[in-house]
Amino acid sequence: MRRYLENWTNAGIHSNMDDDERRKVFLTNAMSLFLAAVMIIVLLNDIFNTGNYLAAYRRAAVLVLMPLIPFLNAKRLSILSKSIFLFIPGCILLGVPIIIGDFYPGQFIWFQYAGAIFCSIPVILFNQDKERLYIVIFFVFYLAVTLFIDKVLLYYAEPPEAMKELVTNFTDFKLPPLFVAFFSTTTLLWYNRTNFRYERRLKSTNKELQETQEELIAKNEEYEAINRNLEVLVKERTKVIDSKNKQIIDYANLNAHKVRGPLARIMGLINISDYSKNPEELKHIFEKLRSPSQELNIIIEEINKTLEEGSSDVNENQ
Image 1 (cartoon, rainbow, N blue to C red):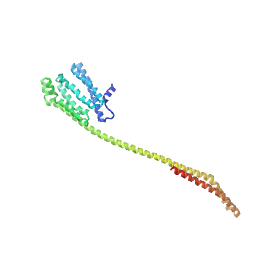
Image 2: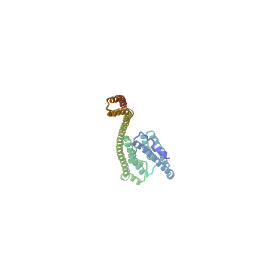
Image 3: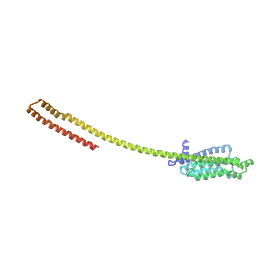
Image 4: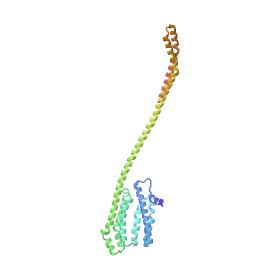
């Protein structure tokens, strides 16, 4: 049952509609559902309580007509569904009794206020900017019903004299429903206009927020790109540092294993020469210095070559 009611009230509501269109379609469906429920109650009263079967037929006709409203909305014929909802039930409930002469004196007042209430319903169902003509048409129609339904009833019926005096009294009989019609209509018009202004402001604010969000997303993507570039740069710098460290380690290894040997021999020979005064011995010592000196020179050339190769690798990485 709940799902059926939801399908009824949400029929014709599509994702590509704006908020106002969704609201109007929903209200049309909801009011048709409400009117159908009222017709069921009144129909049962006509059959089992008052025994007024002619009136029951009219209620049944309106009840059968109400499922047509969500069906038309589902077919995207919302203007037609609104027009049927506003025109046909009024004709059946107000017009048919007059045509067939099936009414009683109390309906003079009931018809008057029914017309007054229906004056404001077009403002609820139609869009105030896009469907203003329909609002005017149905407002004028039900305003005419409110103004002249008593004259039609008097033409077709002979109510008691007291009732005639009442319905011909403008202040006591016609002014209150007219007040209801204009009060409800102007109130709803004011509400719609105010609601429209707030919705327009809300849409403007939402648009600004969306633009700000898009700007923040763009900035965030820019920052992420910068971070990625920084990560790449850090990795490259790390490679350079690692290469430099490797050069230092290689240099330390060369210094520890190759340079220290010939350098120690040279220093040892120099220390020995400090204690020798014999020219022959000094000459012999200097001859001995030639070999470690040459060896040290070769090692230094190897070190320079290694450093140059490391520098070229670093430059290629950069």
